[in-house]
Image 1 (cartoon, rainbow, N blue to C red):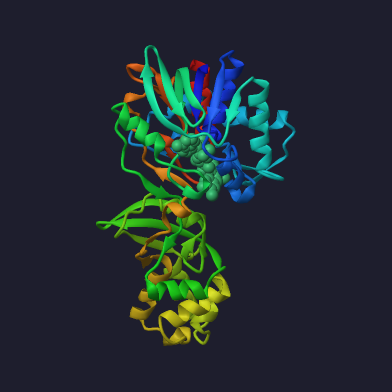
Image 2: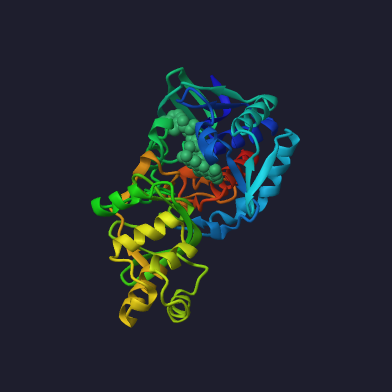
Length: 396
Ligand code: FAD
């Protein structure tokens, strides 16, 4: 079998690249070892797929080579994907500023991509594994469970390592290494934190409680990252958008510094409350600013619940610290099992940011999450998948 292009990975980037190359008149085959295309799209955004973020800029991405993503993001913008979604009459909602989700189901995005692939004449081979990729003259040869396939170009769109049960594998990194490309250190990101036993029990008691916080990561006395988003206590530890976002900065041993009342100037508000309402209980004051279960729990964690008048200046200061700069050292993260993305990946230094071709080997390309380009939470990762897929597909 011979194709102009074989794409390995029927995920977001792979399907987008395939349909773009198909419309450009290329004979395209997409191969995936999973039994369904776009499994991560299906589970994304709680089943509704946060398919883009209208405010996407290169600053929303982590990479050892921060300029790499600029060209593709500039050429294929969120409005382009929205236009595609609208052409397929898929209703969508803006859940948070800029974050667009399907109003109904993520299945519609997968169906849209597969329909476009069909219209573009792309063939999709599921449940097909690739055992080897090798150079073959000016093209490439793949050894697969369906036999030998020759291709003018191979596009590696295997994604990252998160959620192995959904088909994630390190195959894209293996191919990169085989052809002499570097792979930067990979880490699970956009992932909840686990806690040591005492804090785990406390989080467990509060499971389901959420509140808006501002969070930094602390390492060597310095702050890294800053997000103001909801924190969610769970049976296993700390989750919610604030924790997922800051996990992209977190390294083992780091502390989190959490402002539990980012909208309140805690030092002056607490001092004013002691002065104006001295007989009020501290927990009553706390529950005006925090969910009641959390206010009560914090009161218990740090001792008796005195009246505000009973607080000494030193105690007042300690409370200010706890509330506006609560420090906690996570035990770890939930890891690849639940991480939404992989930080790190195929080093982009030897890859064209315009065509995604490997320098000196234009018949081999890498797109999407397998590359060392990782977005923040909020639809950026899909925008990268679409943009890198289109840029590569147009150049094939
Ligand atoms: P993938 O979509 O992961 O596709 C890779 C494909 O390659 C898969 O189909 C896989 O089966 C296949 N593959 C892997 N190894 C092989 C192999 N050896 N042989 C053949 N095929 C192989 N991002 C957002 O922007 N918004 C969201 O709402 C969002 N929600 C998410 C929720 C969850 C739970 C998860 C896990 C991720 C979420 N993401 C979200 C991230 C987003 O899904 C990914 O960044 C995106 O899917 C990456 O696209 P990709 O095409 O590069 O890789």
